[in-house]
Length: 168
Image 1 (cartoon, rainbow, N blue to C red):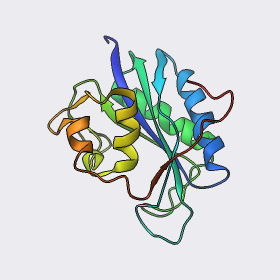
Image 2 (image 1 turned 135 degrees about the vertical axis):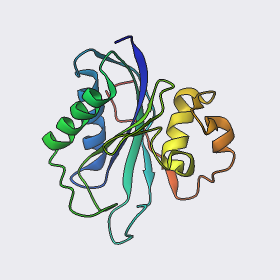
Image 3 (image 1 turned 90 degrees about the horizontal axis):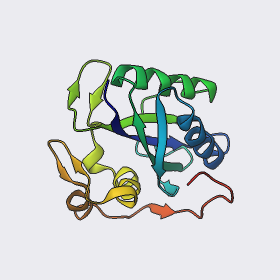
């Protein structure tokens, strides 16, 4: 498989969310046939689903990988499991959530995997970190990140200070 640039969304709101996300970014760099190219700052955001849960810490990582999309998804799910991910409630609290946002310019729509990630264009906690990495990035079928960002408010989103020694 040729090398592809993939963007991964990270989120956590349980058990020290900032540490969960920073640790997961380090683990992404350790996936086979994959290199961490860049990463965004961390952002605090209000929960999308039920509001009776803690705020989330979100980020986006940019990877170069030769893993096929399904194998990349399996690698992300393994990282989630190591972080104690439990899928108890849709949009509920979680120790770690990893999503493939983009996989090159591929458009994939299967039961297990939808790329670009559904809702990417409506989520400021995805668009702001994505724009920090590459605001000219084109999301297949949706347009450029900078254009989508112009339609989204930053309300409820706070950029956090970088953790000393965090991966860049």
